[in-house]
Length: 255
Image 1 (cartoon, rainbow, N blue to C red):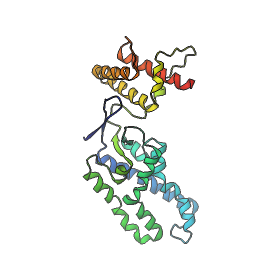
Image 2 (image 1 turned 180 degrees about the horizontal axis):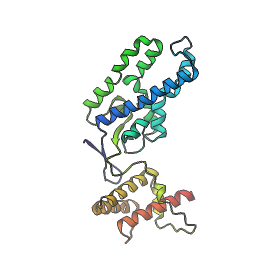
Image 3 (image 1 turned 135 degrees about the horizontal axis):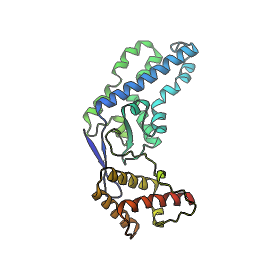
Image 4 (image 1 turned 135 degrees about the vertical axis):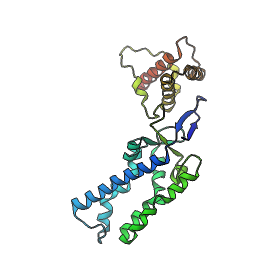
């Protein structure tokens, strides 16, 4: 399985396994299954013919279908229902959850990958047979680019990765380490210099080192964070990083 390494401000790479071609195709088919189900639900519930002269009503009825991928990947942090089922997701080129603009660019490039056929079908059912070729553009791009990116991924700066094999999930929240004690004392106030994204990277690398019992990674991570924040402590590496996460949560609450 192909992998990508994404550099971080800590000089420690985030490692992801790229989603397999089969998983992406299966997710695509599942998503289209939901879209087709919605299509029949709407046509049967409201009892109208999409090929009738009432194109405005047809367009309004199918707005959720047109925007399905955009809204799903944005609201579900890089996933659609199909991607969730196949345990794959979209990430940004920095390893983070894709932004709305990245999701929008990916969605707009779906026009090149297939939505143009949906529009043609609304114009005339005679174009329905062409829909079988709709994935062709995306497949050609995926199979001929280094990181298996389709046109939308290249334009948006995103990758499709597997969540099945990765040791951590980039969207795991740092607030899992929040300490709710009223008398909690902040140990490392320097943590305010870091951002949510910085702390999420630290959390993920720390959890990866714990899961893999990788003391070298924990030591390297702890040392780098101490250098950045100019902190001196005798605490062990994992405990230091956990305290740092708790401190960040408390500082964020007090702001």
